[in-house]
Image (cartoon, rainbow, N blue to C red; front, side):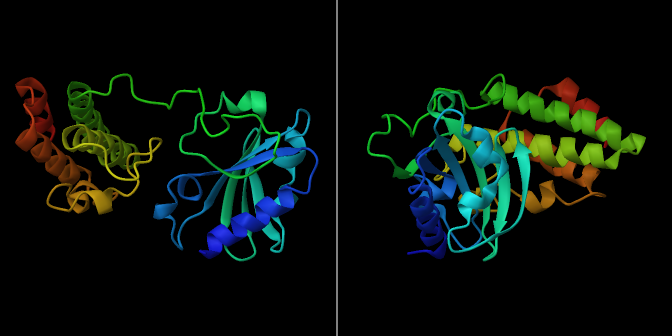
Amino acid sequence: MHPMLQRLDEIAAHVATRDDTIALLGLGSAGAQRGRLDDHSDLDLLLVVADGATSRYAGDPGWLAGTVPVVWSFAHERHGRKALLADGILVEYGVVTVAELRRVPFRGARPVWRRADAPPGLTESDAPVPRPPFDTVEFHLNEALANLYVGLHRDLRGEHLSAARFIQGHAVDRVIALLRLNEGEPPYRDVFDDSRRVERTYPPEVLPLAGMVPGYHGNPAAARVILDWLGARFRVAVPIRAAIEALL
């Protein structure tokens, strides 16, 4: 068994001894997609508790300890924390009641432990996954072009960091979305972050990330690579292409 899963089982065994816990769910590489787990993974967990117990577990990560102490932690959301265990495993967890579970957006949960009388349906959420307004080729193509245009203007203004986020961040996200729509769903897709594992899915000749994400001083070069990539694969409207070319 992978040490990460062994640690998870130890946490679950400790949780099972408590009267106010209902289930421990693994997410991401600790969930239904365990095939992607490796030595660089963290543990994403949802702890389902009885009514009135949320603050107790969200405020104190001691329940994670088991055989390995927690050496550092902080609250990263209202009912969630990130905690580093002494063996180097980073745990990110949220604490919810059964009623709240349906309102938390997640996918691919795996029950690591659950009480025998736990209600059914704990592994799926009714909350929608956050998505852009339109998940279409037309939207992602034109949004990428708009990102390049705004980003280049900010770069010329001297706002290189903001420009990098538009060009090397937002526009590249749209490029990845275009690949997903054109080439099908990638294996082990993270529905909350399309950038995960793209290097394994698309070779450099398909997705030239080194050219698209060259760094702080590389915004014009990145914009050129992205614009050429889009132009080689899609029909780019002449007015916006000309406007971007003028900035380049």
